[in-house]
Amino acid sequence: MGVFVDQLKIEHENIRLIGDIAKKVCQRINQGEEVLSEDIDHIIEFLDIYSYKGHHEKEEKGLLPAIEKAGGFKDGKTIGAIIQDHATLKIYIEKMKENHFKYKEKKHPGLSGLVGYTLNYLDFLYRHLEKEEKVFYKLADQLLSEEDQEGLLKRFESQDFEKIGKEKLDEFQKRLSQLSEQYLKAG
Ligand SMILES: [Fe+2]
Ligand SMILES: [Fe+2]
Image (cartoon, rainbow, N blue to C red; front, side, top):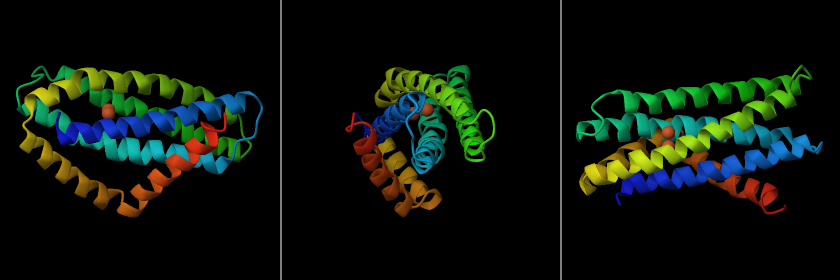
């Protein structure tokens, strides 16, 4: 097991956690309960920045090219499919943002659109995470040396600090525990 793949797995766990929170939010909305718009904004921001900008970038610019260079998946299609998945996930995130905005502006369809896109997004997301863990992460651990993985970890840690910021990353962790306390532990 290498340090870079380990970091990606930690991020998957955080993404799954925010996904479970988003699912709970959808359930509450469907039951007619009120959910704070601010919480929805925080969830969408987490998915957009932490997951899309941070995590997907590590896979597209770090993990996948390293696998290819080490001799895995030379057909170009398999890796292309992961990049396509990321693009699809981003479309869903934009739809979620759009519908949440409509809700705040009291325009149609608003909340029902938000719930629909979020549930479809989560379905797609969970399948994507599983595929990566079972195929790509396993292969990366076989093909990449410990030195390669350490280099990737350092490179992307500084990229996260540069592109997202240390403060924002800390804020994401804090929000993740607050939201899980609020939505998952409260029942
Ligand atoms: Fe991914
Ligand atoms: Fe991933």
